[in-house]
Amino acid sequence: MKENGQILVFVTTLVLFLFVLGLVRRRKIGERFAVLWLGISFVLLLLSSVGYPYLFRVAQFVGVPYPPSALFFLAISGLTLLIINLFAWVSKLNDRTRILTQQIALLSDRLSHSDKSTNLPKANPERAASQISFPDPTP
Amino acid sequence: MIVPSFNESANLPSLIAELRRVCPDYHVVVIDDGSTDRTSQVASALPVRLISLPCNLGIGGAVQTGIQYAEQHGYEIALQVDGDGQHPPSEIPKLLRVLKEAECDLVIGSRFQERDGHQSTLSRRMGIRLLSWIISVLCHTTVTDATSGFRALGRRAICLLANEYAEDYPEVEAILMANRAGLRIAEVSVRMADRQGGRSSIGMLQSISYMIKVPLAIFMSLLRSRPSLT
Image 1 (tube, rainbow over the protein chains, first blue to last red):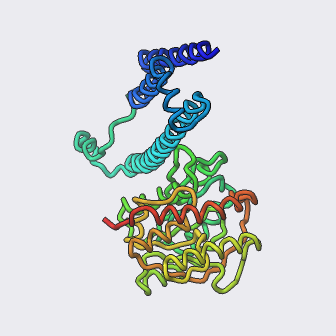
Image 2: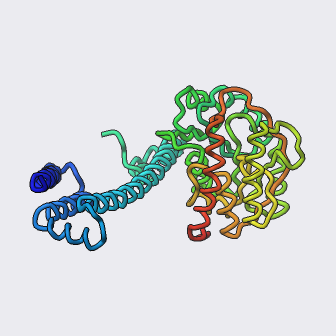
Image 3: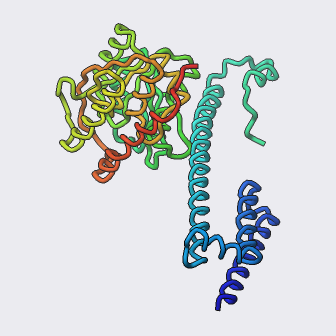
């Protein structure tokens, strides 16, 4: 019974590990997250194979009567950290999009007004172009 | 003059006309915060500079865009007037007078100092009073209407807030930031009107969550390092 459970855990973590590898291969996941997830699945892989007896001993040492719950504890702590990390990441992205939105709005305002107020000399188009420091959006 | 507007096409024309009449020397910048109605079409037909945000940022992001505009174009004074018509332009000279005469960096228009004009609902008044009390204690000044978005900013306040501005509950936090950066804050009594058209962006449930979140946001703002004028 216990062996069966261990095999199930091992197979599951193996699938997770391979899944992450596949994501990395197809460039569906950035390095920053890939390293993290490879690390997590690797540790889980170790714990469910060669590390399993150690997990048992550590659980006994800490006084957890049911070893898999030690694994649960570890997993939940890890996931909590991960989620907080993701929240921080999302906040950072949110900040960046806010700044970008503001910059786009201010730049497009400037652009449209530099178009309207054509007090640039028409005889010298090169100079006129150099005064507008924005790249021409039309291809 | 910064007018943040989110779906305010009904209110804008009369507000802008009034602003132009009261303060003809001031440039009006309308920030269209990704409105889904005809706000941008309406505003582009008015004698204002229209800045359209490509997506909705909320009041904080919109006002900050206006402040950044003032900073980039070297304006000495920025006025913040809500697009919903709650802030009568006829009260603007009061704000400006205090800003200039008292040599302040941030002047807040308060509807509660003299209890004149529109006073909002009881629950909201209580909330605003609590927030104002927190801000007054933290800043060692008397602020009676901390959530008022009717304010005048001097150059130093413009430079500070262009760089750093709260996103979700900006009015209250901006006072705190200005205070922590060593700017001078004053308050002046103004009369406010009830909104003329459109809908308020704050409902009942939101006011309750507002009352929980803003003190938390203030607390978090205190945890951060002191903002500085650079």
